[in-house]
Image 1 (spheres, rainbow, N blue to C red):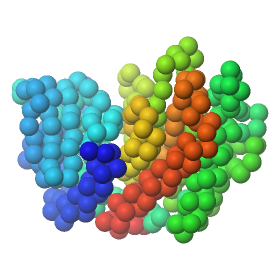
Image 2 (spheres, rainbow, N blue to C red; image 1 turned 180 degrees about the vertical axis):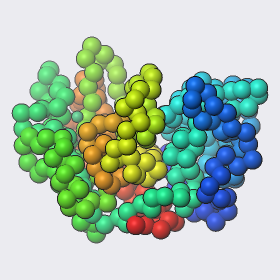
Image 3 (tube, helix red, strand yellow; image 1 turned 30 degrees about the horizontal axis):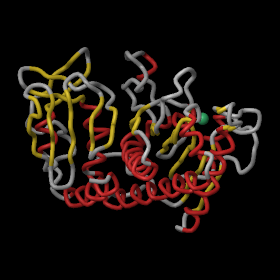
Length: 340
Ligand SMILES: [Zn+2]
């Protein structure tokens, strides 16, 4: 099944299931809850059953498949990686097996899976109505971003190109579009968030390309949204006190998840690159923006193959189209909810 088709049916499922979603106050349903190292966990089978997914062990006590006609999720003991309709998605905490029951953290249930499976069951806040979209072309001016020196390629050139393409597509779709930059200039990270916030943006899309020193074979795309409050970022091995801070970006934790999933789905499906995962990080722009926000790392300039592709207008046009499709999918998903 293609990722796009999977997302479409997940969407259909979300509206079909919206009416049957149980109480907004008892997330755990009838299943048991446990605490592991101070973190609340709930019975995965009981949670997903409430949204019409049937649970079956792939390997007893180790990995579980949750499936309905509209969604398929695979969860594994001691792993943060889950497979959602064929996409790699990173939970905040690993799944835990105890006495033959598989548990997921309550925050992952509430702030990741609930908005994906049943947006209308998210108690609060309502997502903003989608009218104004801020596009953030990463880097600029003296900040070149990542580079492929052999090919003389700068990240800042390609982020701006994709941002301009995306602007044209979103304007065509009737959105008001705000840009954090439209030419080759340096813009501080807090200033980027401020531009979006001052314009009353309902959505924020930051465009980047990746690089890693000394690992030329690493390639693929990843999608980031703000790390939910009380969770550690994907790259953090342990929780620390800063995880408890409530940042402006946390106002939209559930909607960030819904947005990130749909954007990642479209980017992976369209670019056909390696799926490096839908992840969480407290990047400055994600932390400071008042609207749902997403940051896309759409390939590695440090991988020569991928750098050659990124340097083609066809790749960047496909990326812009995928981002526009992601906005469309997110917009459709929130039509089942009351907007603010
Ligand atoms: Zn970048």
